[in-house]
Length: 247
Image 1 (spheres, rainbow, N blue to C red):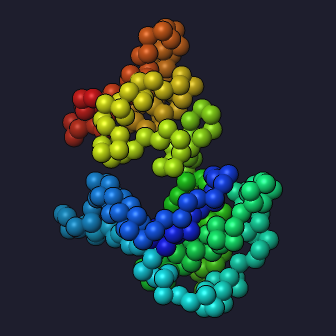
Image 2 (image 1 turned 90 degrees about the vertical axis):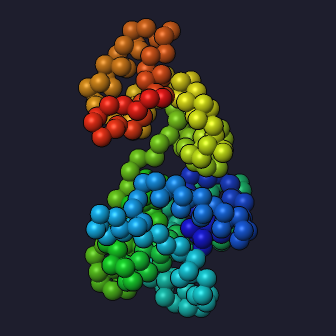
Image 3 (image 1 turned 135 degrees about the vertical axis):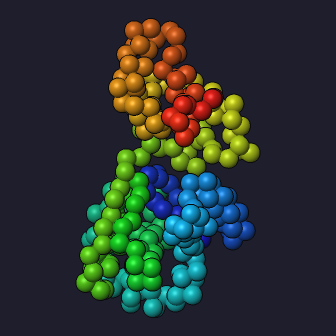
């Protein structure tokens, strides 16, 4: 996100993002790398192919404006960009949308094209708010090379008020303990809205679905005892033998 982070995705936003400077982006990328290293194998351990962490700034900042407009913009219609819900909502709002954020879709489409051409990437996965950006990349690749690639989106984790769990959202909880202490993270889920409990148990834990149903039913029968929120807050990743980790 070294390049796209300098622009800001308008998806899910009602106003313009604050532009980040280079040092801030570098710090953000370093922090994200550390988090991803807990989930992905970048070393190729056990003989498995290693995951690759790349920064789109490496292939974007050297591209000139004319080359970008010719090689990317030529293949994407304004009609397609205006059809994107987040763009349409911003255009209809009083604040409008800058050309900078309007162009974000082209940058992400270009990323997919580069990763396809240089690394054989055939699938881009993202949150449901990324559907327009992902399909723009699919279409760009098809128009430029005739190749067929794919996109997969997953529902965003949202609160009962419809707000998503974003790093710039109000009341955000962070994965780094230097931003949100473990106790604060635990308490956040202990105090979660009853309307969110069942969905969060299904989305954020590895509890069996039947067990989730039982926990939610028990909570509904005695809502004064926060059994379901505590189960959500206490649920940790399973150990090798299937036991739940302590809170």
